Length: 77
Image 1: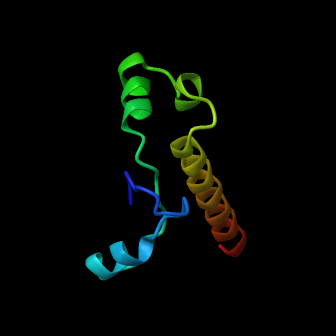
Image 2 (image 1 turned 90 degrees about the vertical axis):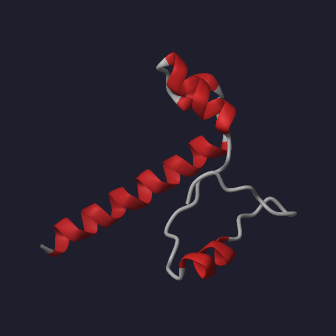
Image 3 (image 1 turned 120 degrees about the vertical axis):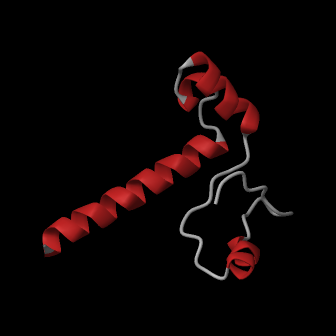
């Protein structure tokens, strides 16, 4: 799920999205359109545009979890 806006306490609520989609939302990405747009326009990474942005942190979490899943799949194959 991309372009999520955190709630009152800075947390995402994926439950509403899962209810609407009637399925599991595996990952959430922050809504930081200005940073993402600038990175795309300038051909630079998110970290080069805005270090430690929420969307960069979210993408690092997604990458780490996907890498872990791929490694575990390789170990069982």
